[in-house]
Figure 1: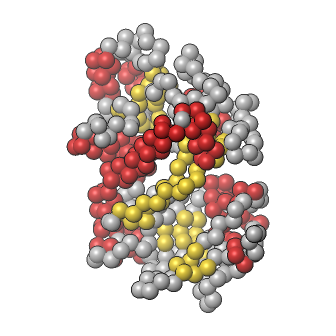
Figure 2: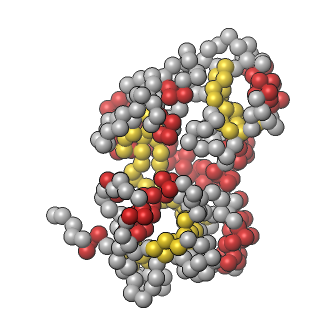
Figure 3: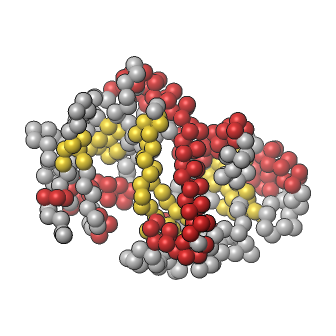
Length: 354
């Protein structure tokens, strides 16, 4: 039975001894809206007598367009000044932790203090390595060997020497990712060999160098990656939600190590591949250069069988949990330092992060 327009409105859930919750009813087809959030009318506010508003500091409209469309559908108006009255602050980049103690009880922000221990590649590797040393490679075995640039160039050189990489193995490749970059910017692949550390030093590379994983899982000869959405609402107790849907993004040129300069063969970033002649823009969930996660799961099931596919998703869940556990103590420390209510033992009600 088709839902009425009233069914699509947000509603308020009230439970005993808990604050009321505004439940978002996300439309089933939000991506069909091709316009700007500025053209989207503000929907009906379900809370009588309460003004709903949000502040968004992103300077790039397309990064938050669909988010703002959904907020406006649910009665939230945009405010243009950070000091104005708002309910939700959608922060692009890292939140200024000094602003957190100034937040009012009804205000929420989509970032935790010290979250860069997860979001910066160098910090993510450092915390992963700490957990690997503590609990062993059997438990933490899901990241390739990595070195921080430029600080660990000497360790990289020693690793290459100890591995016997003399530059003649075409499958020995390193992938270099710059610090604080996104959308595939600045990523490069390099053949391994004794001269590599000096080459990276000469290029002034700053970021991480990771051993490139050859023989990736290919579909129709193309590399792909999956984007899974994980929401953390609390670090103590650790509370993590994983959304059931997601994305699969495909490279647009056939995978080969014969040419490591072919960015559209080795990188799956949408912002890069959408400019490729091989990019296929298809509204179907199971074709083109971007699929739904559900479609990818079905294809994986057909390719490898039920037992292996189930093991893949079990390991994905395991990676999510272990990654969060690896930074739990750091995040709790940040919450206690910058949120007075949290330091007093009150549950977190003001920060969340996806």
